[in-house]
Amino acid sequence: MKEVNKEQIEQAVRQILEAIGEDPDREGLLDTPKRVAKMYAEVFSGLNEDPKEHFKTVFGEDHEELVLVKDIAFHSMCEHHLVPFYGKAHIAYIPRGGKVTGLSKLARAVEAVSKRPQLQERITSTIAESIVETLDPHGVMVVVEAEHMCMTMRGVRKPGAKTVTSAVRGIFKDDAAARSEVLEHIKRAD
Image 1 (cartoon, rainbow, N blue to C red):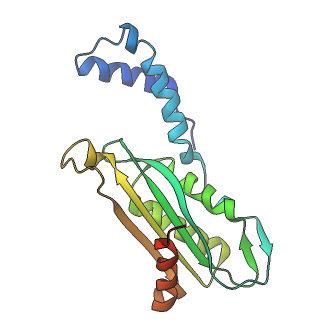
Image 2 (cartoon, rainbow, N blue to C red; image 1 turned 90 degrees about the vertical axis):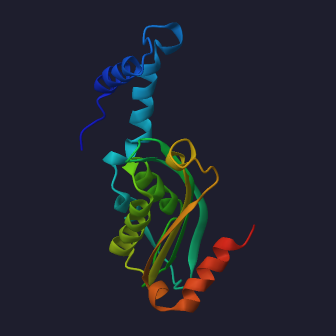
Image 3 (tube, rainbow, N blue to C red; image 1 turned 30 degrees about the vertical axis):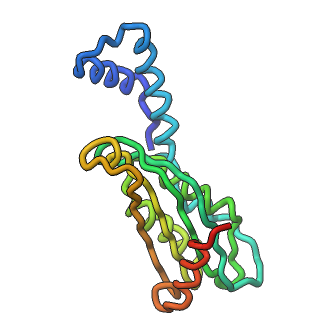
């Protein structure tokens, strides 16, 4: 994957400022193209990362029960409007054959998938598929809830509206009780 071209981003931001009638050479905007280019390199850093790489480290552990990491904060950029959306991801899986991954690896996968122009639906399914393909668990359930600035600051203008997506694989898809257990844990306040 190629690196972010900061110089090209700077030129584009300067052109956008001019196109909206601003003076990119005025004091407050003088370094804005450079700042935006640096920010884009950071917020799109997941383009060069494969979330499956985070699941290559596994631990042999005789545990074939629920593992749930909830409230993993993330932010991403809507690929339709290039404005942020942000929220929480909840990841549950039931290990198979002693293949347990580090808890931080689940959070790192969320980061890898969300730091790119993205759709919430794709974040959700990509995380689930990455876990299925690398860990081969009995089941995976990923629930993502987020607020989209494209619905808050433009268009319909509904601050506080949250979108919830889920990806359900394996036992969680087939067993309503297992699925309900995860949802109850997610809803439970700490």
